[in-house]
Image 1 (cartoon, rainbow, N blue to C red):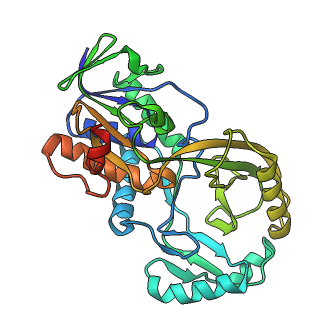
Image 2: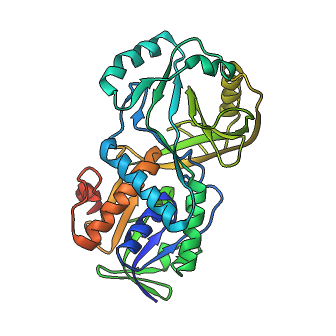
Image 3: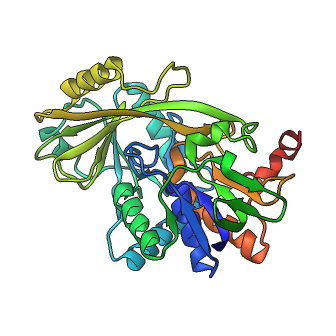
Amino acid sequence: MKVDYLIVGQGICGTFLSHALLQSGRSVLVIDESKPFTSSKVASGVINPITGRRMVRTWEIEKIMPFAVAQYREMEQLLNASFIRQCNILDFHPTPQMVLAFRERQPEEKDFLRYTDDPAHWQQYFNFDFTIGEIDPCWLIDLNALLGKWRQYLRDQQCLLEQRFELSGAAVSEDKILYEEIEAGKIFFCDGVEGFLNPYFKQLPYARNKGEAIIAEIKDLPRQHIFKQGISLVPWKEDHLWWIGSTYEWDFTDTKPTDAFRNKVKQQLDHWLKLPYQVVDHFAGERPANMERRPFAGLHPVMPSVGILNGMGTKGCSLAPYFAHELAAYLVQGTPITAQADVQRFRRVLSR
């Protein structure tokens, strides 16, 4: 079997890279071992243009977010399914200091920040003493539906090999890859945290980052918004279920769920939420974050048959569609990858 590209991993990066290359008329084979818990499958699926306590714009969001939305719409048409909807964040300010911070930032970020209409409406659902800011627009992606539908599409196109990829079984040269009975011109690693150990890219400035989230049943809470006060409540899959999280732990010994996080969420919900709730699941995982908070996209500087699309951190829903398209355009048309994302910026360390 001969293909233009092998793609290792079918998370958010592997999904959009395989889509972009197939749309460009290239042949691909995605190699992916199905796992119930990956960083893509347990992510909240939120695209938020404003980040951090300082409430600043996410990097390049003005062009990345509209492009990502268009890509999800295109996938909806192709796969005859629904994956994306606008779902603004209502940010309940917990302290006078946060009220003041929002008041100062809002005039500077009128494109994305405003005060919510009719805050009194939310008093039947939440306890709160201060103002409610709204981040508009935000988008909610049904990642599990998208990944599942795209996986079936790859199966139907005979573009999926459902097994664990073993690099030791590959013969890599500068102009081709041989793996089992498959020959490809290039191989791309879109394998999330597995990339930490990849001998071609392990020198990249990855940052091990653990996140935890809880799934809870909350009946009668409107699902048109995401709610935030220290933790975030995000509509999740079936009616009444909510994704609640998340942590950002940089120093940890394992990736198991912790009692500390579960207790923190319960204390916050007991204080904030007026409705009854029931915890139905609790999971944790490791994200493919990096020190620069910029993606890794492109070809290895010494071995040009080996490439990468990884390192999205918590912004995969917005970054992956955009940089998958850039990477595909680079491969097919020779157009440049954004310098801050091009893995060639690490040429010196990767050439050792």
